[in-house]
Image (cartoon, rainbow, N blue to C red; front, top):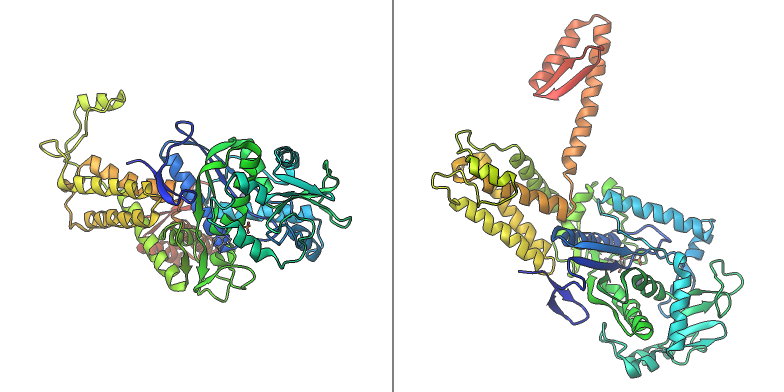
Amino acid sequence: MSLKIYNTLSRQKEEFKSIIPNHVGLYVCGPTVYSEPHVGNLRTFCSFDMIYRYLIFLGYKVRYVRNITDAGHLTNERGEGVNRMESQAKLESLEPMEIVQKYTVSFHRIMDAFNTIPPTIEPTATGHIVEQIEMIETLLKNGFAYEVDGSVYFDVKKYNDQHNYGVLSGRNIDELMAGYRDLDGQEEKRNSIDFALWKKASPEHIMQWNSPWGKGFPGWHLECSAMSTKYLGETFDIHGGGMDLKFPHHECEIAQNTGSCKQGGAKYWLHTNMLNFNGQKMSKSLGNSILPMEFVSGNHPLLDKGYAPSVLKFLFLQSHYSSELDINVKGLQDAEKGLKRLMEAVDLIKNFQLNPTDRKPTLDELIGELSGFKLGHRYNTEDNKETDLDRKIRLIVDACKKCMDDDFNTAKTIGNLFELATIVNSLKGGQIKPEEISSIGLDLLKNTLQNYLFDVFGLRNENAAVSNNKLDEAVQVLISLRKDAKAKKDFVTSDKIRNELSIAGINLKDEKDGEMSWSLA
Ligand code: AMP
Ligand code: ZN
């Protein structure tokens, strides 16, 4: 089965066919860097990280472009209101570009802490003013834009006479115009539904650039059209973002692309759904937004304790990217337990040895493997055949791929990984005998757990890392106490520390330089 994606544009699941074989162009709307991203934003970026990782897993060479919105678009979706970057700069007594730098750095730190892979290109809006001006000029030339007193607007009605404004969101322009009629600041526009491509800047406006229409700044929607076209071409494979960007942002992007290049940009549009906390959409204005690092530290009144980044990611992955996800403390606790079970299975299977009496591969088989030819499966069984357990594992592994191919169904894939973990536990517990599985089956079990958990989902075995660090810290304290005791010739205490640790399964070793190392027994 090949990959199928729910395309928001066609409102159906479609088989994914990349424009250039084996290559994928992926554009995702990035963060507006005027404040820290909250956990809702994080969910969206983690969803696209999983999609990016799975495309790589399938063997595609992906050009992944995710922009940084740093030009300070306006709070109002039609291009009015205040510039977010500037108002935050005033609040923090910083330059707007200091705000951009501060929150870009912290965004990268968070993306790193949550083990997401950086995009291959991360363009900024302020670095592409020239490209945005060029696109406006083309739109003016093609008759889909008009200038009024230093500002340029997109003529939605005129565009809609030839194309379909609403193709993505299904909105109807007559209804939209009725909704906008009574709002202020519409005087300059031909129609209330028109949106700003370029806004004339008032003298006190800090972020402004020269343009053929005087000093000003670009409209909200323009940067993504200009940068996706520049780096991925007039038509490219996938465009993504949160569901709340579908209208007006993405609808306007399609109009700008079609109006300037006669192509709508992406073939497939993917929208991730919102994250709710205790039943409410997470957003700053509702006061229920939790910052990613507050989840890790547990330093938030709505949380009972801190959770490792992978626990939160695992919770995200347990529901489909296009479903709303309501998280609460109970869900986090369950996700922590579930992830622990899978990571324990990874650890158990890593060191699992088949019975030493297993049949060794024949010379022919080894030569075949070494020269890269597959001579067929190598099984340990007497009759050299797949065992029933091998077959069961193979079917579960196939199911994992089928689920991921079905519009990235991570929730169902995780269900299958739990079935593999049950097999690992039964092997370890002796309910399944080692001779029931072949080395092929064992490798498949091991690799599948590792591939999906680490490579595709980008999870980490953080509990192990944290507990190893903590253990090391604790043992170092005891080593230093033992050194003090030896220096004072208090051999009773020094021996007691060594012996008690040995009983606890930790061996101390005196090194030549007087230092001491430790290892697990
Ligand atoms: P912003 O920095 O506000 O432009 O948002 C960055 C991304 O996060 C966009 O793709 C938004 O659609 C997405 N987003 C915003 N709020 C939420 C939420 N509560 N749940 C999931 N995604 C969100
Ligand atoms: Zn965008």
